Length: 297
Image (tube, rainbow, N blue to C red; front, side):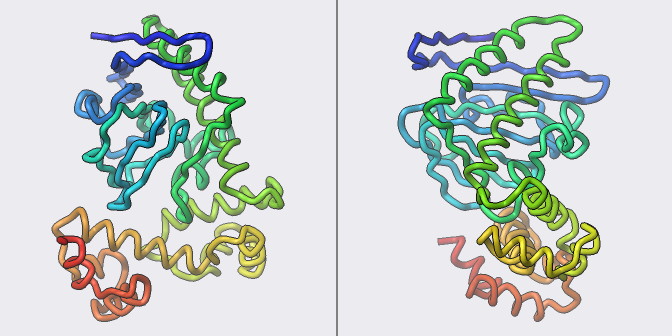
């Protein structure tokens, strides 16, 4: 059963919880939208390929946990998550709007030339992709949301195409904001593309490729060129990003699986568990055993 909500001329919503889902069983595609993901997350037929865009439409912060990291999502902020993240809504007390889609519905990797979001909104390794909707653009987002509702309510042969087109527009708008808010303006488009492509490659190859030169080769650039661009970016160096991605995955495996330290070491490409332990302590100041104990408290 669908429940609608109304909007006044000032863009202030009166919430009545609702959920929508579009599926195509022939190709296994899923696209869902809800005003309360905590309440409705079991309703959607999501899988390991699901990507989400979470939007705080309340006038107070909303609290979530991403990879065991507490996050206070402020009003009119969005955060993007992928199937690589572990997200908890245990501390989420107010309705949190969510868009969810899987790869068969819209593959951001295959359509990267259309939306240019890979490595910025999704599959980035440097910081959480939280963006703020500027006051002057809030009406645009609210209008787009209402169009989503209309399209979900229109069942015809082109509904999937229309929803995909709207999702693409949402991603493009968010990517523009992310480029403005999460990257430095003194980077040109070519440099930004190089940064985001590097981020994506690290997500794909961090278990087997640990040198900057490995990624420079994949990008047809010199290691020095990569280092110089990231120096302009004023974030972590390429080498720090690679090592940080390995440490992040180690934490995920410790927090969310039953794997022992030795198994994790081998999963992450360490031939010697002692080497992994030394690496982890250097990255976190804790040994793997100490880290596990801290997470229990």
